Structures are given as structure tokens and as C-alpha cells.
Amino acid sequence: MVQKTVLKVDISCEKCKKKLLKAVSGVEGVDKIEIDEAKGSLSVTGSCDPYEIIVKIKKTGKFMEVVSIGPPPAPPKQDAPKKAGEKKPEGKKAEEKKNGDEQIYPGYIYFPPPPLYYPPLEHVTQPQDSTPLCNIL
Image (cartoon, one colour):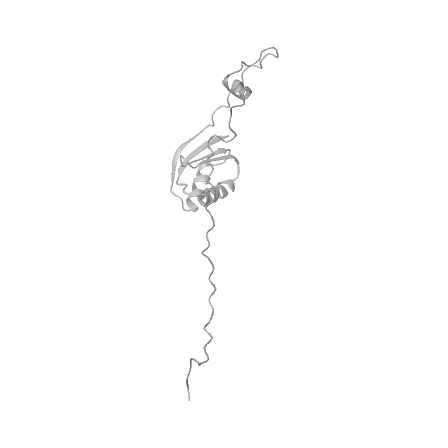
């Protein structure tokens, strides 16, 4: 029987995410694994035992809390196919593209690199004295 297990797990970095993914993917019967870092949730869909998933996560050393265990949600229903004669009405985006006023990267701000500064080189020469610096007799 296919079921969905949702767990709340502390996911603080990419390494933690990979560690959880590796541990849960080793369980037999797992069909789909979803990790949401923002919410801190791990969803596992498949015919696997939820207890095995919990044990594997505890072995990784992560704190875990069970949110729900149950049947997966039904897939979204598709609408009836549209007729070939019907066209989508043109919206504002189509008009904006025709005007050519769009920017390639509207949120991109260019910061030029800082100038390379090297202090001027000074040429230092040793004084040419005829007297030696060490006088041992």
C-alpha cells in the first residue's frame, strides 16, 4: 500500500540534506523523496514502512518529529482538452514584448570590479662604502 510519510527534520545545511537523502533512499520501497529546507520537512512516498524511515533518520543523528502518515494526495485532475479553434487572449505580457521595452535582467545591478591598486615600486640600493661593517682584528 502506497503511503506518504511527512516528517519535520532540522535541515541546516546542504551536507545535512545530502545525509538525510542518502539515509532515506536506502530504505526499500521508497518511490519519491521531497525535502523542503525552508519548512524543514521531509516527505517520503512509497510502499515502505514509516518505522524504517524513522529509524534511518535517527541513526543520522538528526532531531525528527512525525507530522503525518497516511495516503498520498490524489493527483490533480486535468481539464478537458481545449478546442483547436479557441485561442488564449493576449494579455499585457504579449503587448510588452511587442513594444520591446523589456529588460533582460530587470533585477540585476552591475557592480564594476574594484580597481587594482599596487603601491609604486621603489628601487633601493645598498650604499657603496669602502669601510667594512664588521671590524674584527
